[in-house]
Length: 435
Image (cartoon, rainbow, N blue to C red):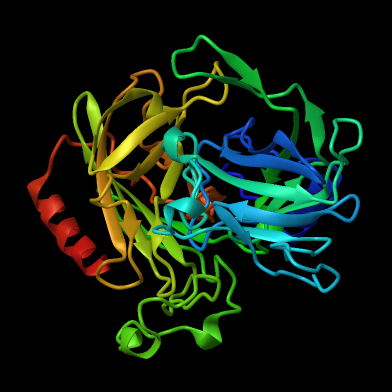
């Protein structure tokens, strides 16, 4: 039986209780987190200059537009004199300062990344991407975001500096819980020729972990299924992602783009009217059966007019992913969170080809097919074995159909034929109508 954490309100309450007393934990990415490293690089007359580096060590959960927002509470009465590579969202009350005015005087500042194209004198390495950060599994080189700030009215030695408290991270919405800052060994830096080593004056780390339950009361995607051996299509469950947006949804034939434009804020969902009311649907179709291989078609459909899913990821757990032979149209990477198991893989769009799922409509669809080699000891079409155990889109687990609703193998079928033109033609027409 496929386990679904949204299947029962009692289970949901129980899981919430667990997460309220423990750090978030993802079974498919047990070590995934966002680490914020604060390096004090030099001292100033009334404080220090620090480089803050945010590294996304999550394998498949990235930070999409409109990007991250980082916040904290100062331990004393510190101010931010200046920033490079980022900016505080509010200046706060700086009326007591004469002459030089700080960049931010708030006791609890919030900081955002700068947009691409800012002047060079406002940039630092790994900044200015609008807060978009790739996942570590997808692109480690783009999984880092940095900023520099000059802090005043702070300590000027390792013994007088006080660590900020109560770190918060929106990426771009809720879901992350951050630890308290912890002093760690100073970061080491090496010259370009590798012959000289320097180090930060002081370094502390903050670790932020993600919980889907904290991020949303409902799933954000659902899974539908079909197969060549059964004419029944298993749709997403009704209200898979909750039906609170049903009164404001958009009929598919509406001229929605002329009404809201192409740049509607992504924090205000504008969903196409569907039975499931999910922003994203993933469809798994068991397409063909060969002697030693079998073929699957995966389709991702965007029903959210307000969102382009940039650098999306799709994670699938299935026991036969240990024998993937070929993947078309998508990039693929095996995920092996535990050495004893190889049943999880990550799919993502090819750069500049299908890495963006545009808004709902003709551009809101991406498709791929994969060929898997059969293991004669485990392979079967019976009891839903050919369908995935878990599916994640952009790091959030999707609502699966109930196991009893999976396309079933007809009882009269004793041996699945390698090909059947008549059945294939019938199902092709059926699926064309479905898509």
